[in-house]
Image (cartoon, rainbow, N blue to C red):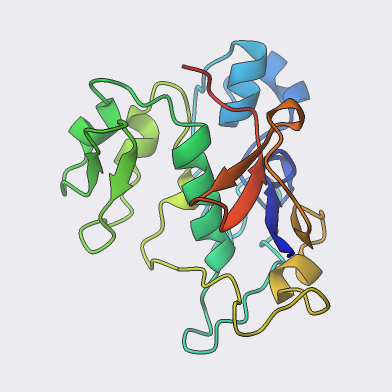
Length: 206
Protein backbone atom coordinates (compact mmCIF):
# COMPACT_ATOMS: atom_id res chain seq x y z
CA UNK A 1 0.00 0.00 0.00
CA UNK A 2 1.33 3.41 -0.96
CA UNK A 3 1.89 6.07 1.68
CA UNK A 4 2.75 9.75 1.79
CA UNK A 5 6.53 10.23 1.87
CA UNK A 6 8.14 13.58 2.69
CA UNK A 7 11.80 14.23 2.03
CA UNK A 8 12.52 16.83 4.70
CA UNK A 9 15.98 17.45 3.26
CA UNK A 10 14.49 18.63 -0.04
CA UNK A 11 11.79 20.56 1.76
CA UNK A 12 14.32 22.47 3.89
CA UNK A 13 16.37 23.44 0.86
CA UNK A 14 13.49 24.43 -1.41
CA UNK A 15 13.57 28.04 -2.59
CA UNK A 16 10.06 28.55 -1.19
CA UNK A 17 11.13 27.82 2.39
CA UNK A 18 13.25 29.98 4.65
CA UNK A 19 15.96 27.39 5.14
CA UNK A 20 19.40 27.81 3.64
CA UNK A 21 21.52 25.37 1.69
CA UNK A 22 24.58 23.79 3.26
CA UNK A 23 26.82 26.14 1.26
CA UNK A 24 25.41 29.08 3.17
CA UNK A 25 26.37 27.60 6.53
CA UNK A 26 29.93 28.76 5.97
CA UNK A 27 28.84 32.40 6.04
CA UNK A 28 26.76 33.04 9.18
CA UNK A 29 24.50 34.54 10.35
CA UNK A 30 22.10 32.35 8.43
CA UNK A 31 19.20 30.05 9.23
CA UNK A 32 20.15 26.38 9.08
CA UNK A 33 17.74 23.52 9.14
CA UNK A 34 17.86 20.95 11.95
CA UNK A 35 19.33 18.11 9.91
CA UNK A 36 22.13 20.30 8.59
CA UNK A 37 22.96 21.25 12.16
CA UNK A 38 23.24 17.56 13.00
CA UNK A 39 25.46 16.79 10.02
CA UNK A 40 27.79 19.74 10.33
CA UNK A 41 27.78 20.26 14.06
CA UNK A 42 26.45 23.81 13.61
CA UNK A 43 23.76 25.73 15.41
CA UNK A 44 21.17 28.19 14.12
CA UNK A 45 21.94 31.87 14.32
CA UNK A 46 18.81 33.55 12.98
CA UNK A 47 15.29 32.87 11.76
CA UNK A 48 13.25 34.15 8.85
CA UNK A 49 9.64 35.17 9.57
CA UNK A 50 8.18 33.50 6.50
CA UNK A 51 5.33 31.02 6.73
CA UNK A 52 5.51 28.20 4.21
CA UNK A 53 2.47 28.06 1.94
CA UNK A 54 1.07 31.33 3.30
CA UNK A 55 3.74 34.02 2.98
CA UNK A 56 6.56 34.53 0.46
CA UNK A 57 10.00 33.32 1.43
CA UNK A 58 12.29 35.96 2.89
CA UNK A 59 14.98 34.63 0.57
CA UNK A 60 13.24 34.34 -2.78
CA UNK A 61 9.72 35.78 -2.53
CA UNK A 62 8.37 32.42 -3.75
CA UNK A 63 5.40 30.62 -2.25
CA UNK A 64 5.25 26.91 -1.71
CA UNK A 65 3.65 25.49 -4.85
CA UNK A 66 2.28 22.29 -3.28
CA UNK A 67 -1.48 22.20 -2.89
CA UNK A 68 -3.93 20.36 -0.67
CA UNK A 69 -7.32 18.92 -1.68
CA UNK A 70 -9.03 18.84 1.71
CA UNK A 71 -12.59 19.73 0.68
CA UNK A 72 -13.85 21.38 3.87
CA UNK A 73 -10.91 23.77 4.28
CA UNK A 74 -9.83 25.13 0.86
CA UNK A 75 -6.89 27.08 2.32
CA UNK A 76 -5.57 24.03 4.15
CA UNK A 77 -1.93 23.00 3.65
CA UNK A 78 -1.96 19.66 5.40
CA UNK A 79 1.57 18.75 4.43
CA UNK A 80 2.82 21.49 6.78
CA UNK A 81 1.27 19.57 9.65
CA UNK A 82 3.00 16.41 8.47
CA UNK A 83 6.35 18.20 8.36
CA UNK A 84 5.79 19.42 11.92
CA UNK A 85 4.97 15.91 13.15
CA UNK A 86 8.04 14.46 11.43
CA UNK A 87 10.26 17.06 13.07
CA UNK A 88 8.70 16.46 16.50
CA UNK A 89 9.19 12.71 16.32
CA UNK A 90 12.60 12.40 14.70
CA UNK A 91 14.56 15.66 14.79
CA UNK A 92 13.62 17.25 18.13
CA UNK A 93 16.30 16.76 20.83
CA UNK A 94 13.66 16.14 23.54
CA UNK A 95 15.43 18.31 26.10
CA UNK A 96 14.87 17.47 29.75
CA UNK A 97 14.18 21.15 30.42
CA UNK A 98 13.04 22.43 26.99
CA UNK A 99 13.56 26.19 26.56
CA UNK A 100 10.88 26.28 23.86
CA UNK A 101 8.24 25.16 26.36
CA UNK A 102 9.43 27.61 29.00
CA UNK A 103 9.50 30.51 26.53
CA UNK A 104 5.93 30.22 25.22
CA UNK A 105 3.85 33.12 26.58
CA UNK A 106 0.59 31.27 25.86
CA UNK A 107 1.52 27.91 27.40
CA UNK A 108 0.90 26.41 23.98
CA UNK A 109 3.75 23.90 24.17
CA UNK A 110 3.96 20.93 26.47
CA UNK A 111 6.04 17.81 26.82
CA UNK A 112 4.95 14.22 27.37
CA UNK A 113 6.50 12.62 30.42
CA UNK A 114 6.76 9.17 28.86
CA UNK A 115 9.06 10.03 25.94
CA UNK A 116 9.72 13.81 26.27
CA UNK A 117 7.99 14.43 22.93
CA UNK A 118 6.70 17.95 22.36
CA UNK A 119 2.97 18.61 22.12
CA UNK A 120 1.53 21.79 20.63
CA UNK A 121 -1.86 23.09 21.69
CA UNK A 122 -3.05 24.85 18.56
CA UNK A 123 -6.01 26.55 20.25
CA UNK A 124 -3.55 28.45 22.46
CA UNK A 125 -0.81 29.12 19.91
CA UNK A 126 -0.73 32.62 18.41
CA UNK A 127 2.21 31.87 16.09
CA UNK A 128 4.42 34.40 17.89
CA UNK A 129 7.34 32.08 17.06
CA UNK A 130 9.03 32.68 20.40
CA UNK A 131 9.70 28.94 20.51
CA UNK A 132 11.67 29.11 17.25
CA UNK A 133 14.05 31.63 18.80
CA UNK A 134 14.25 29.73 22.10
CA UNK A 135 15.23 26.37 20.60
CA UNK A 136 19.04 26.22 20.80
CA UNK A 137 19.19 23.64 18.01
CA UNK A 138 16.97 25.30 15.38
CA UNK A 139 14.58 22.35 15.34
CA UNK A 140 11.40 24.45 15.42
CA UNK A 141 11.63 26.20 12.08
CA UNK A 142 9.17 29.11 11.62
CA UNK A 143 7.25 27.40 8.80
CA UNK A 144 5.76 24.77 11.11
CA UNK A 145 4.46 27.22 13.74
CA UNK A 146 1.21 28.22 12.05
CA UNK A 147 -1.41 30.64 13.30
CA UNK A 148 -4.15 29.04 11.23
CA UNK A 149 -3.67 25.37 12.03
CA UNK A 150 -3.84 22.96 9.11
CA UNK A 151 -4.40 19.23 9.23
CA UNK A 152 -3.72 16.29 6.96
CA UNK A 153 -6.26 13.50 6.55
CA UNK A 154 -3.80 11.57 4.33
CA UNK A 155 -6.40 11.66 1.54
CA UNK A 156 -7.80 8.33 2.69
CA UNK A 157 -11.02 8.85 0.74
CA UNK A 158 -9.40 10.48 -2.29
CA UNK A 159 -6.30 8.44 -3.04
CA UNK A 160 -5.31 4.90 -3.82
CA UNK A 161 -2.30 3.21 -5.38
CA UNK A 162 -3.21 4.71 -8.76
CA UNK A 163 -4.44 8.13 -7.62
CA UNK A 164 -1.85 10.09 -5.62
CA UNK A 165 -2.71 13.09 -3.40
CA UNK A 166 -2.57 16.46 -5.15
CA UNK A 167 0.25 17.68 -2.89
CA UNK A 168 2.59 15.04 -4.33
CA UNK A 169 1.71 16.13 -7.87
CA UNK A 170 2.20 19.85 -7.28
CA UNK A 171 5.47 19.95 -5.31
CA UNK A 172 8.03 21.12 -7.90
CA UNK A 173 10.99 19.86 -5.88
CA UNK A 174 9.71 16.30 -5.52
CA UNK A 175 9.82 16.55 -1.73
CA UNK A 176 6.35 14.97 -1.47
CA UNK A 177 5.83 11.52 -2.93
CA UNK A 178 3.18 8.80 -2.96
CA UNK A 179 4.89 5.42 -2.98
CA UNK A 180 5.51 2.08 -1.38
CA UNK A 181 7.83 2.80 1.52
CA UNK A 182 9.10 1.11 4.65
CA UNK A 183 11.15 2.37 7.54
CA UNK A 184 14.85 2.11 6.74
CA UNK A 185 17.21 3.87 9.18
CA UNK A 186 20.18 3.19 6.90
CA UNK A 187 18.50 5.40 4.29
CA UNK A 188 17.32 7.91 6.94
CA UNK A 189 13.68 6.94 6.34
CA UNK A 190 11.41 6.85 9.38
CA UNK A 191 7.74 6.18 10.08
CA UNK A 192 5.62 8.94 11.63
CA UNK A 193 2.46 8.38 13.66
CA UNK A 194 2.96 4.62 13.61
CA UNK A 195 3.29 4.46 9.84
CA UNK A 196 0.58 6.86 8.70
CA UNK A 197 3.29 8.49 6.60
CA UNK A 198 7.07 8.50 6.30
CA UNK A 199 9.86 11.06 6.23
CA UNK A 200 13.48 11.16 5.20
CA UNK A 201 15.59 13.16 7.63
CA UNK A 202 18.77 13.04 9.64
CA UNK A 203 17.43 11.64 12.90
CA UNK A 204 18.56 12.94 16.26
CA UNK A 205 20.22 10.03 18.03
CA UNK A 206 19.85 10.20 21.79
